[in-house]
Length: 363
Image (cartoon, rainbow, N blue to C red; front, top):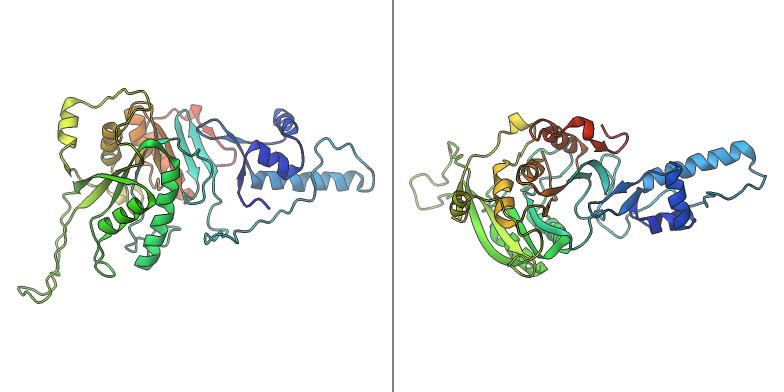
């Protein structure tokens, strides 16, 4: 039994026990809905297919269950329940199914999805990944558990970075914004540990950018005050690890850049100084300042390149894509944050609402 929630045309034909040509006729007759991936591939929601099956069965019973009918679109007794027995990812009613296209307009896509299990993005199709994953420091997200053990957090990290590796082109880059270290729940060398995991997966290391948020809080604890017995040293900075898949020199894409001389000179200095974003203003517990993805996108990709943020959050990376003439894909497991990202694209990104191409029923 197929455990995926989004199926290709061939898989849909197998699922409904009909031919691919029949699927095409069903589309023309508006019997089936589909969504398009950034590469143009048609995907069909298993949820919609099961609804169609249920409706078709009800129709047949009402007509005459004993009378033989013409099998134009006859659906076999395909099970309506699927399981995830071979994966640790547990799907509950509160967690959205993977690969649900929440929003699409021109060169921007939002998937209400899970990066580890998503299959709506073609492998070797992404030019640049820019993201800031959960930090596991007890942030109160709607769905994600940000209180894992450190071992579980690193295991989770390995899974999603592995998926990102398969999605990147051979000359693709990866800009990963994470803490330098953390002390909540115990001192951990986050940057060093995640860099090691990425290299084990196959990524090659290029450099590390230090992001000085200029947000030095007034601390009231220094460990052992005025004593060498147990002082705490806390650096109020974050990092952006710059990795690549196979070759650092980028040869694919338009080879057209819109970065200015001053921007290039400033941003190739590995210490970036700009403020973070207000969570109260944006409406997200850990908002991503647009300036961060904007710099990464202009510095490490060409105009027209495909950019991916597997933890979209409030949508800052897609806003940066609009500002820099890039295509953008955002993956976000929380539908409320998908809605927030869409709202920001409408207001801050000034996308014409009349040109929206949203999936029916997504509000």
